[in-house]
Length: 240
Ligand SMILES: Nc1ncnc2c1ncn2[C@@H]1O[C@H](COP(=O)(O)OP(=O)(O)OP(=O)(O)O)[C@@H](O)[C@H]1O
Ligand SMILES: [Mg+2]
Image 1 (spheres, rainbow, N blue to C red):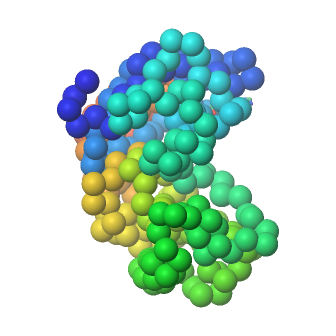
Image 2 (cartoon, protein in one colour):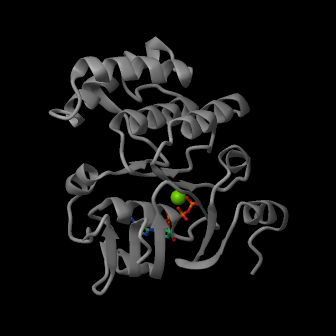
C-alpha cells in the first residue's frame, strides 16, 4: 500500500438483490487527490458510492477489502464510516420534512463543533455558494430545485468536514453559473480532502482538474487516466 493511501480496495465486489454489480475492484485512492469516476448509465457508479458509505441494501461480497485509513470498513455501519470521515453527496438528495439544515448539522456534529461555529460556517459557505436565506430556513431540501439541492449537499459536505467525499453527479441538472460556483467552492475548500467526483460530463472537470479519471464499465475498472481521458470520453464516448 502507498504511504498516502486513504482508501484501498482489494477484490472489492458488491451485489444488489443477488446480482453482482461491482466486480473485483482493486484500487488505491490517495489523500488529497481528486478522482473523477465516469462510466455509462448502469455501470455501477452509484452502487460503488453507496457501498463505500455502507448502505445496507448493497452487500459487499466475502473476500472484499476496503481499508480506510488503516482499518477495514467493510463490516462497519454507515454511522461508523461517517465518524471515520466518509461522506456521500447523493445523486438524488432526499427531503427531510420538519428538520432544517442548521438543525441537521447541529445534530450531526454534536460534541465536535459548537453551534455558533456551525452557524457561522453555514452563513459563510451559503454566501460563497449563493444559497438564499429562504432556502436555508426551510426544511432540508423541501421544495428545493434540483440545482439548489446539489448546492445544499456541497454545503453540508463542507461543514461536516469529512476526509473522503464522494459527490454523485453533483453537476447534473445544475446551470452553467451554478456549476462554476460549485466547482470553484469545491476547489477552494478542498485542503487535504479526497474527492471522488462521479460525473457524466467533462464540464465540471474543466474547473476541478482531477488527478485521475477512472472509467467504470459493467462494474469493472476499464481505464484509468489523467484529466485528458475525460476529454476523450466527451469526444468519442465509451466505445465498446
Ligand atoms: N436496489 C437495486 N435493485 C436492483 N438493481 C439495482 C439496485 N440498485 C442498482 N441496481 C442495478 O445496478 C446497476 C448499476 O446501477 P447504478 O445506479 O450503480 O449505476 P450508475 O453507474 O450510477 O448509473 P447512472 O449513470 O445512470 O447513475 C443497474 O443495472 C441498476 O439497475
Ligand atoms: Mg448513478
